[in-house]
Image 1: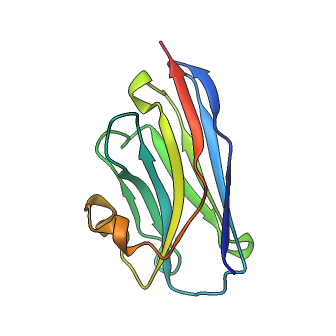
Image 2: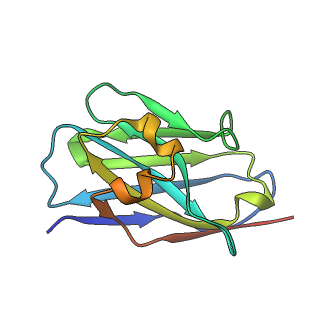
Length: 129
């Protein structure tokens, strides 16, 4: 079974930084898009960032572009999300997810939620003002 293990959430003051990690176990695909969604209280889950396994293409939501950086270690099946200049509106549960044979650009669509093959349990990020 494929399992995604996310970690790195926590409480941070506005302007601070956190780094999320997501490791895929039991995963042997070569072509996949792996990234992060988030869901704030009372809001829909949205795509935040993605990186592609083979072409290295990335996606960032407009709200995080320039502040968040996604990277990967394919040998470890691990994706990282470095979050800088955090804002209170970044407060949410962050979920990592993987879709095989999928483009990162699709993370901007609501349809991407149904397209993910595997989801990890969320990790809570709380940014205080």
